[in-house]
Length: 178
Image (tube, rainbow, N blue to C red):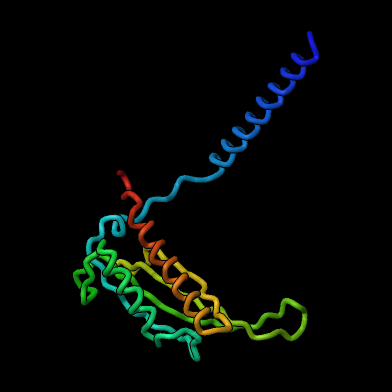
């Protein structure tokens, strides 16, 4: 056998080995990832939604638009999407979208000293069953405060877009049994 044939065979063996390893790794990853759990039927079948302003406790907020900004912005996004009929009261609605915007303050003592105050601002959406008030699903998004007002507002808009995208993705998932 010539050296060029042996080299060609060696490259073929290496290529086949590499491809086999990649495929085996992909199969392992797929086996280790469970199938998505079913979306509660109430979410999958909902036609009407009441948007609830659960308010917040963001004192001295670096975000423009006042305390009602999260509610107003989320409501406008849901209305422009058009997937749900937005109702004026929870009675008769298929779901309640309860939106809150809060800042939690704590102490970071990770450096072994007395610690420093830290805050975590979050936008949270809970999807509730109106008849039982049981939370069916929830999303939280951290909203990083910026040094500049414009940066804080952009971070808020990004967090809101993420919450809205998560609702749209959830609503697009098939109902159990479909």
